[in-house]
Structure formats: structure tokens, C-alpha cells
Image (tube, rainbow, N blue to C red; front, side, top):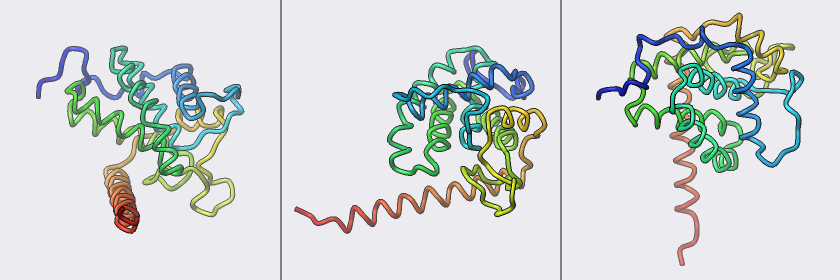
Length: 199
């Protein structure tokens, strides 16, 4: 598949190095607004964000850096998917909306498969707040005090600056975990559907 001139190829990566703190802050605000579109909460440095919020924001920010129509396509898809995905699975909704929105860009031929893999792997590592680097958590999963996946925006931005992309091993474990979760979710839905009384 040929990528159009506004698309993303491996040669234009890594985009995370070009992402400014202000752009990332704006992307985090976009994710917060998408999660609560009718909310009146003011987004500030004290607002709390999860690793999943950061993952979606880093993808969003990289598309913003690229400066093409990709950002609008991602935003529209993300905002459209998020409410149902959060209702369906509150613990994975933000990640799943970001994953599906980003995947739709690849399927549309605007990002090469290899560039998409590199971006996701880089984003996974750069979105980590806790020591569990092969998972995007929304709470403390290690049980260690202070090792939490929920941070204030100011701390999250600082962590992003100091972080690195995920290793191949971390990324492989992450993909396996999420594929397993999606399969379990589909199986549970099918069980409910099959258990429902037929009219």
C-alpha cells in the first residue's frame, strides 16, 4: 500500500522527540474533554490523568506534530468511539478508543504498518507512570506505595520527558495482554447474548 504525501512513514519518526510540553498538555486536555464532554471541570496541572489518558494524548500529540488531516480523523473517531467503549469497559475504554482510532488511520493508508508499530511502541513506553511497563494502568497495580498509574498533569508531563519507548519485550507482552483482554471480552459478550432468552 502506498502512503500519501501527508502520511507517516518510518523516516519521519520518532515524533515524540518533537512533541512540546504545551502540545502534550493540549492533547491531555483533549482526552479529558472527550471523557467528560458535558463536564464543567477546569483542566489544570492538578488534574489527574491515567496511563491510558497519556497513551491517547501522546498518539494525539504525535499526529498534531505531523500537522496533517490525520489529527482531525483521529479526533473524530476517538470522540465517536469513546462513550460506548467507556460504558462497555471503563477500565480499558480510553486505550481501546485510541487503539481503534489509530488503527483506522493505518487502514486508510495514511500510516505505514511499520511506522504505526514504532509509534505505538514508543507511545507505550513514554506513557508509563509506574514500574509495570507492559500495561497501561488506571490505578496502582504493583501494590507499592507511590508506584501509581494515576498522576497529576504536572507530574505526568515530567515523567514523559524522562521516559523512553518500550522495549521489544515490553511491547510484545503488552500486545499479548491486550489481545487476551479483547478475546475475553468478546467471549463474555457472546455468553451473555447466548444466555439471553430468545423470543
